[in-house]
Image: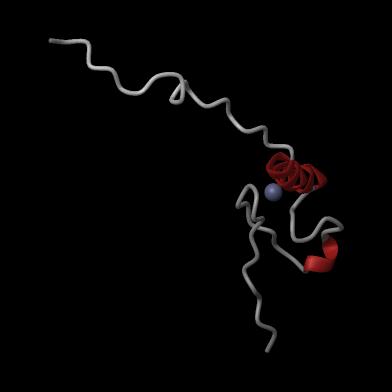
Length: 65
Ligand SMILES: [Zn+2]
């Protein structure tokens, strides 16, 4: 009894019927999805720290008397 595992692409969540060996880019359905995943990883690496909004320029200065 072959248990058909329901495999879905982790990127686009599309179903991937058939054997995983049919997908050269497994576990992604297509090369495109694999590149998207790769891009996400690289995105983590190359993530540029957001320039912090000026929270060191001036202490909270209440403008009231
Ligand atoms: Zn996909």
